[in-house]
Amino acid sequence: MNLGKLDSILANQPKYRIKQVFQGVFGSLIDDWSAISNLPLDLRQDLAKQCSLDVNATLNLTESQDSQKVLITLSDGSKIESVLLRHADSRNTVCVSSQVGCPMGCRFCATGKMGFKRNLSKFEIIEQVLFFARELKAENQRVTNVVFMGMGEPLLNYDEVFGAIEILNSPDAFNIGARKISISTCGIIDGIKKITRQDLQINLAISLHAADDELRSSLMPVNKQYSLTELLAVVKAYLKKHSRKVMFEYLLIDGVNDRKIDAQRLAKIMKNKLFVVNLIPYNPTGEFQPSSHLAISNFKKVLISSGVNVTQRYTFGQDIGASCGQLATAGK
Image 1: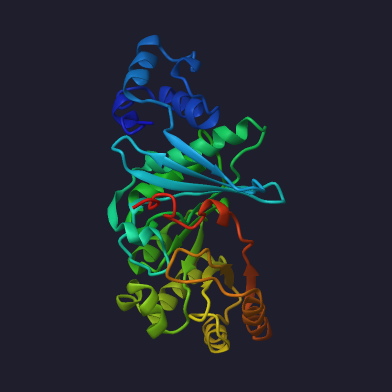
Image 2 (image 1 turned 90 degrees about the vertical axis):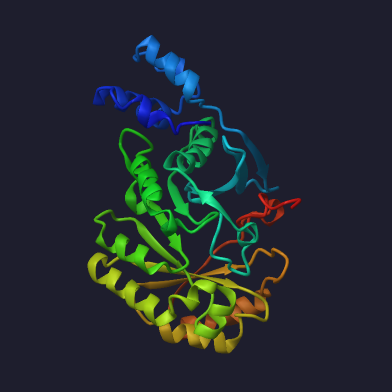
């Protein structure tokens, strides 16, 4: 797919033409420009020549089909991943990538092993949602939620990420409510400050994974630049403006961050009614192993007994390599 030329092709078109294109591609989910019959023939031909609507994708399914992971090859040969999570309550959540690779180097993340290649454009981000939207349309379903929790750090590609969010949220495109869109960051403080200044009611999630600076720095190099104290301060400033719950994601890794002392430390810094800790069983990527069911249960009990708001993520798609970067790094 190559929608990157849309802006230049439509630059001199009247606004209603742009609306027709967006409604056709992102609303009606057409895969052939000839399907937008109210466009002039010459414009359809120009779009067909310069903006392919084909997605070069390889799809992987879990045995239960509760998740689908796609490996998309972009026009320059770069490979990115996206995941569709099907929930029992009829929600369909697409987890999208924002970069090819990632510069953050988190030890538990397969994407970090790729290193950083480049940022994605807003249309390359949208391509991931579009692929699954077409798949779901065939089942008379739609994408209901989008989370920026795939490959890359979204707040290091801020402008393109929010350009994509504008399309996702637009009534002329996917028409996904802002409150159904979430951005997960490892803690880029300048980016969180920018989100704080936004009026858009998107959800903020923080990849935390440790409750003390020494351990977090060993797992996530970003903590050497932005300490937990600094991170929590900027999150609290975000809460003062938006008064919206903030999700703190916590991967549970066997023998690393799943001890009682880790839970107690986490409980101390999570005592805020708008903080929610999301416990996530780790999908192994080589160096680490997931915590046992007993360890997860005990960890959760410590948090609950301390009055912390806790959720626990169901494990999706270990059989398709659902951790970020597992497909893109396969064979490398």
